[in-house]
Image (tube, rainbow, N blue to C red; front, side):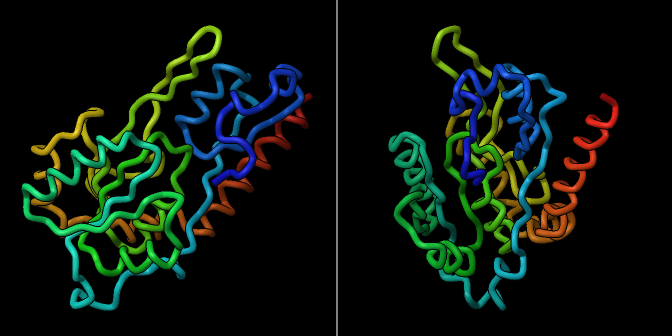
Length: 228
């Protein structure tokens, strides 16, 4: 992740109001959210690329031993219970990767032993774990979170997502709303072998692409400074 601050509310108000700072951000929805607090010309989209040489798929389908795994992060436990109930009703085997209590090797093993992944997270500025899953060529279904809300003073609500870097129909599919919808999920299951998530990563978000986005942001900043 960004490792500094994900949201403008995590910065001191004086830092935001000075007008001297420019911000490198991870995705379009984050830029839109920051623009409630900061002039948009000071905001730059610069996603981090994934190491697709480290996150690669299993050698063969013979490695697949489980239907899916659930990546669970910052959602109500009831949501997890509802998803588990759906999987039980559909007689699908699963593992749970619980944010904060797993090692990176656990995720890589899950990627290489499961047919698909279910993403059950809150909003993500970029979602590096999701990119690692996609790089391992694991089709992913997202029970999406669609709103980010700032509660202090005058509450601000803005559109958001659990998957800022994702292409429906190529990397997997996304729930049509915030509910746990079994019918839409079944549509994903019927097409699970047609998705090409690793190809999408290779074409859009490798480490090389990440370097390009950073250079693009730097060039834009320099152009702005030269015009002053």
